[in-house]
Amino acid sequence: MWTPIREEREKKYYDGEFKDLALVSGEFLFPEEFLRIYKNRNPKKDFNFNAYILRDEHPTNTKKLYPFIGLYDPKVRDDDKTGSFNRITALILEINEYNRALVCEDFASVLGLRDKITVVGNDEMVELWKPETYEEFDSTKARGVDLFPNDKDLTKFQREVYSGKRK
Image (cartoon, rainbow, N blue to C red; front, side, top):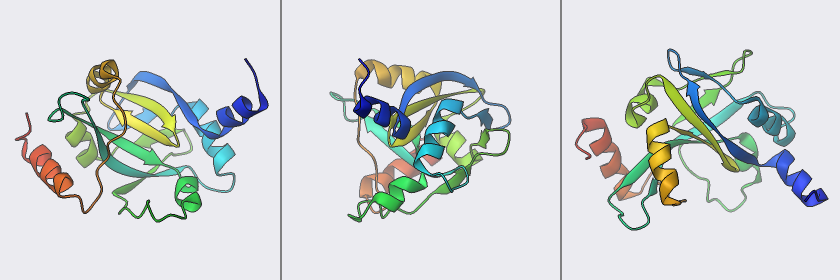
């Protein structure tokens, strides 16, 4: 049912899934719907996101990690007065004039991205996933554990991912 609150929410928050988008030379076509929401949230800013490697955990098996790239637009940082967003930006992901975004090689290798990517809207964040990982994660209905820069587990997780030791 339509309500003014629902309409306002749909203009300001990322929601939806775009599965198996083509990934060519690290670039993919950013969903137009998310670009419209970005402009509603950030009318005077260029299209760029603060990108982080995050993870979600399996709800019953906490050893199973589901890594993804979390993209936050400038509005999240501008609105956050609590200091909870004092993370070091891993990179800035820019959307070019053709609505294409480039995933850096380091991030792509951590996620194991090859020729497809899944883009998911999750409230104030856009998530980039390896399609197979997202399908497995989505079937668990888990959400919401992310790693912070000074978190000891983050360092261990990054080391294991980059060295290929994580199973």
